[in-house]
Amino acid sequence: MSWFPELLAHRPEQAWPQDSFQLVPFYRGLVELTPETLLASWSGAPQVEDPRHGLVRGADAFAAYAQETREWLALSDATAWPGSVTQTAMRSVEEVVLDPEVGGARQELGAAVVAEWDRDHRLTAVRVYHSLPLVAGQRAHLPVAPVEAEQRLPAFVREHLGGRDGDLDDLLGTYEDDARLTTFTDRTQVVSGHQELRRLHRVPAVPGSGLRTTICTVSDDGRSCAVEHRVTRDGSPEPVEAGVTVYERGPHGKVQQERRYAVLATAAFAPVAAAGSSDVRGRVDLGRRSGSYATAGSLDG
Image (cartoon, rainbow, N blue to C red):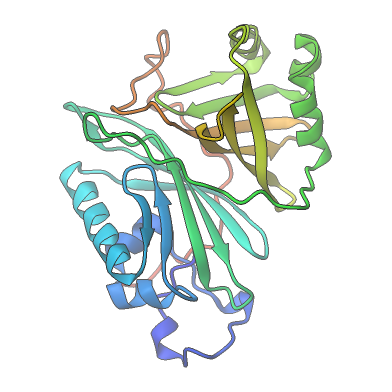
């Protein structure tokens, strides 16, 4: 994520060599950096899409969003635990586990932050996908990712997605033997190994559902690939789901980890563990850790 705590010491018009950045994780920056530093990280007017807050556009709205997020993290006693970062020249996908207290119990909830940059590495847009609790009766906002004209899916992801339309054994063959799949939607679920994956994938699709998935963006850094998508129902342009899935390569060129972050249009309350998955807490694993983030020194701006 592109928060720059040292940005204000330089001229605004100065170009930034990519290897000079001190990148700060999204939620850590919202909590620890000054509003001036956060605003200076944008190339123009801030634009954030968040399921809890909707479309946040402009400096004033962004300042209020940052303040509300800090307050929510403090009130729920939540820590943001950083995970993997998939990063290309113009985009990053940062994975995070948040552990707020919900209904008197602490939960592990996933979030994926997609950040778009310009050529000077300043932010142009941020889309946040998470399953954080909403206000009762509130309808989740589904982030709107652009549909890229040129989408280059790496072979291991292309084969995996193609396997979903074929035989179950062919699909399982696109996973490493010890592969793990984690879903963060209206509930958190973790399955691992071919036996559990077989049980998960053998659940048949609902007949006549008419669901159509559109791939929006593809970000591949050679180690993992993040794919943004949206799901619509036949006859309606309004999406019923939006999300991003991160596929991590294994030693045999297959899917080692698949982590799905999806926002459902119907989600309105805190997620709960899936039936039969009471041991979810502690099983959440966001894969490799990135060394791109600053870890030392004060971030007081």
